[in-house]
Image 1 (cartoon, rainbow, N blue to C red):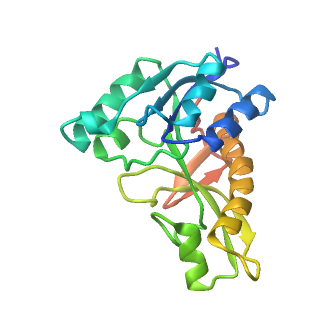
Image 2: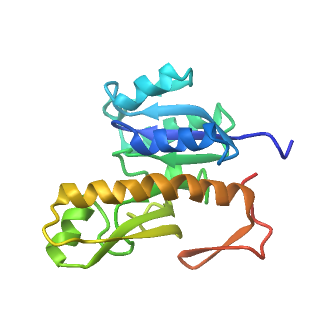
Length: 211
């Protein structure tokens, strides 16, 4: 039982480049998991085509069809539970998840953000970094909580800001690191022991595991 791939769900809204990076890492044997379900809140998300080509189970759940954010979150929870998912990964999912979702899956929902949190939470993090004149930007994998981009930090990667960088050029270099550290964060949570201390995930010397 312990050697079976851990079922994941992936939530997307667009191209799903981090979703593809996770899928590739699974194919390469770097992450002991399988993608059990891909959910998009947009029917035209490019990532859905990729998922269907790979034979993955998909669901389109437009948030506008639900009476409230809470109702939508509860519908997501029900869909994910149908597939006995152990870990949910947000991959460009452009909806903020509230208490109904986060409390259903405590310490089992991940997101990746294009900054070194807690710096520059929210939208346009790369542009925020340039406007503030920082010399180092980066990416952060963290657990999802109802508070925006405030969950415990799992992994980070630094990306130097170059002279003449635009939001697009900086974003492109950060994305390379996103594709590297997101699968690595998943792998470590699945194969290593870990615990949460404040807003930080500490690996080793613990009985906690997602397997």
